[in-house]
Length: 120
Image (tube, rainbow, N blue to C red; front, side, top):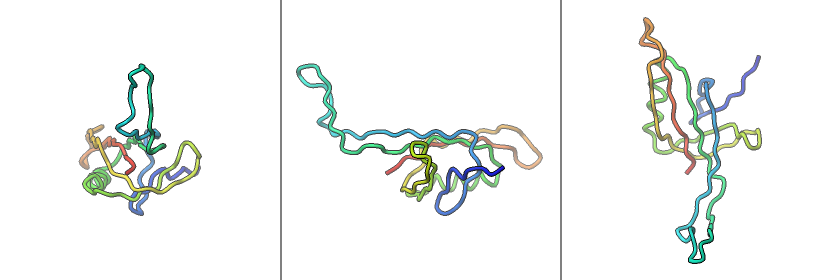
């Protein structure tokens, strides 16, 4: 059975994720908000900004590699777009990086890593 390669960062395929979620957000101007009449006014200056929430179960080697990616300010990400069911490429950064020991093994454990990829 062939699996989809959901994420590729800086030319490197990432492991198969245990969870993958994509959100599309709008960026609003400062002039957005509630008017004096009590109605909502939205001045959208950018629509469909991608945020991907992802988690993996990885070896210590992959934990080190993913931790190194977290420190980079700009990442070129090829991702699976859940809206179009196609692949897209954009510039992103990692936020909310979390690593948790899932199971202690003889070789430094099995780790759960989760983070958000945010589009610039």
